[in-house]
Image (cartoon, rainbow, N blue to C red):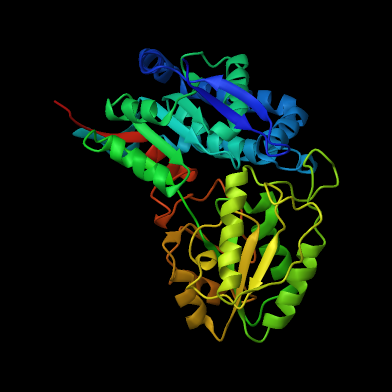
Length: 458
């Protein structure tokens, strides 16, 4: 009997999609075809590869209405937000823009005595394991620069967003990228691990859970295959005494609640200077109470169901445990809350770092808010975490934000904004968030290897 992957729609719990997984033998054939195609692809002029990726991005843009509808069915994001093409195109086209410079040789010497230079070579076949929460944008982060740099790509998408990999393959092939250069596959965990252990890939990029990242590293152990990971997060926001409270509420609450809180760099804990604490909490509660929880296919829905009932169950458990330990839940249960995937967004006060809701990743629409007396206390609390992806500081003092940022254990420091991925900056993390360098010029360095030339002239 063939194993299958099932996408259960969070809208109503029905099976939205089901796809058979590849056998190990069939998956090996995918890798063999990707390896066979890689040399000819890398030999094509860089300008051609860049243009083909741009054309593929444009092809995806022809179906944005369909994208929004399909994402609502697969992972619950409301259609009013229009899918992901804006960020998808911004990221992919930026990597196309900088490719020539980022992949250019570094010339150390070019004289009558010698030429010394460092070039960048494709790693070969790149495995991209993409997550469901921003399924188009997270995939393009690696797919675009990998292809542009001369690699072939095998994409394994999350079960919750099975259709996204198919849509990307359709668009990339329609744009003229050869079938074997970009392949979408349906794999189970065991087959994926076996392929990595067999050294079928020259590079592995994984975005997902800490457990998943560990499994990737275990599979790659001893193969010397580079594994880039972007895993869990518990991103903090800090509202300094000089902050614009209204702007801080708008920014941080959107960062905490958008996409039902299912953002890699979403805000999961907030520290507010004690002088602004009461005002911030009052405005934050009003902000959340203005949201409409409901069916994501309805255009007036602000926040849809979580992508899976089990995700909502974990968030409910964290909230319940916190309240049992003395936290105060400030949001009354919304009418649409069904005890399943549809979950009331929640604000918690009287929280401490002894509570899981302030320590473990929630990945849902809940945020704890704590008062702090000064920068030093805020820094200590922001760093009191096993994760390190982003941190947001709301202040009118850029020098202070810079100084605080230097003391934070994080991959990105924001001032007066949050929950945004700038393709010109390196997307990276530390601690249990994993290690990797996505986007920016550093993204190309990760997806290629250096080769040195020392050509002594006779």
